[in-house]
Image 1 (cartoon, rainbow, N blue to C red):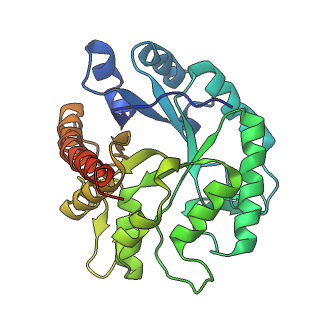
Image 2 (image 1 turned 30 degrees about the vertical axis):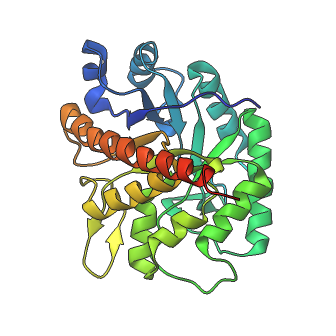
Length: 287
């Protein structure tokens, strides 16, 4: 399985912006499509996707692989995903580290897994099978959590164990880390420090709803200052990583979203310089 190059800054492709992308070039290097919206054999979504794909590379991001479930893998669904991937040739293909249903029921939510060695083995085996079917390396995203369960592994230990055992890659959602940290009262920088940066292919940034004593990952608000700070911390530790902003509700004009993406560009540029200078200083330290 080969890994295509992904670089720069992107946005999630939403129907509200189809015509904007077709009418004139926009300041984005790539677009992320919601896989599950394009699995039909025809219709307007695929029509627009084919036209936009001629101008912009895409990545595919799904919500229905049900990676953590005990149900058998949905082979029909996976073959549909592969067919779409063969059509659009995405720079990467991702889904979420969670379960979304059991006993054939779809719950339409991204539900957390138990942080145990048994779950690591179960999920890793399923990811390897999915990669074999897709003939592509899968990129998995950390989800937001809302309760803190007693478990032998911390969330970041659980994520790390899976990406190593399954030999897959990581879509690091910085907003989800912040949301989980607020809800479970841990330091989000501790999570970032533990992540194997060489496995991170992409970063998600998004807004959430803050209710004071808890946060909900809603993707309907601008990125808040605390998430920007955590993004800056991540890039200072890792160097530049392809980054996009998600907006799924209360969707702004494309120009407003690109202006927000420009904040990510500026933060990444400065933080990457900090990372490069620090790395250079370490190289020159006496042994």
